[in-house]
Length: 407
Image (tube, rainbow, N blue to C red; front, side):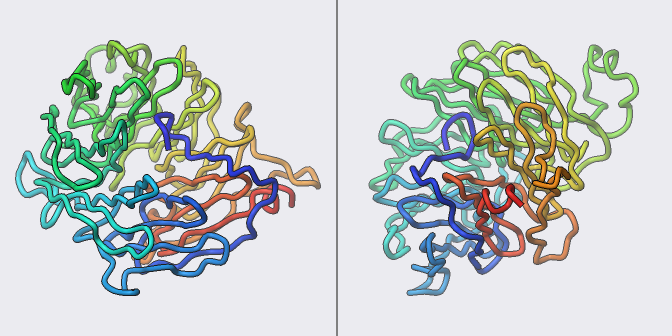
């Protein structure tokens, strides 16, 4: 996906695939990964693994075909592939102690792209719910036991590891071309120099940085969000936001990628404590940050250099997954199963041919019948003129963007 965390890719095609859906065995809480005409994804509670033919939706292999194709625990991470192997991280959010998040089997495994058969398994202490990152011949995974692990992708053997300030829950590491890795840990944001195998900088502050993947802009700004209880607010925050004395505060932060200096910070929203995936994931495109907040039920655009808020677009339900920004449009989903598209410059809804606003599109629901758990915590993926998004109703939806927006 890249350090900007904007899941948009050019397939060189002018046409879009028609609307369709792919059925898996359980809730989909990760974004699908599409490579070389194949779609890979894992399931939440069962750990079932699937590969589909993108064009016709045919199952190439699945959780029960041609044999047992499962991770040993939950799969919340996106699969990662280098064309030779598909890498799957797994684990759950239960705590086995105050310092270790993840019970039962946890780790990273590699499977054969052709058959789904397991090639190797790398067990860990503590979950690996964040998506690992490939860089310079190694696979980097962060764990619920506060470790960064560098794994040989050919063998699954540990190359080296580094202790982090705290456990990592859903903060998938972002790696830039110069070998810097950025990740949110418990009450910390960390920059790791992978070539020197050491922490280059860290920002310590009470907040759920561990819950969100950071995004890194080309201009050297690391953006992340976090939630903190008002009781933990600083004197400066209490003075700036005196009317937010109840519940929790949801902030967005911009850090200098080289030094870790805090460049800017803004309050997205506040309110009662949220359920799982408490914060919104940012994505960067064209010098702007786009991010949702479950507290305000809206999506924001910020100038990445100054931290100026440019616009806010309301949704009908909570927004947790990262938006996708393509061709001057911002695509995002909410926890009610609605898919939106707005203008990236203004934040306004697109217009139909008759001049009326294009309404959000209803997609899925949740197998558990929960009202707030549909298109979350992952966001949409755009490939050319086709959008893909996973839902907790077990389906991955494929949407023709031109057919949708040109109604």
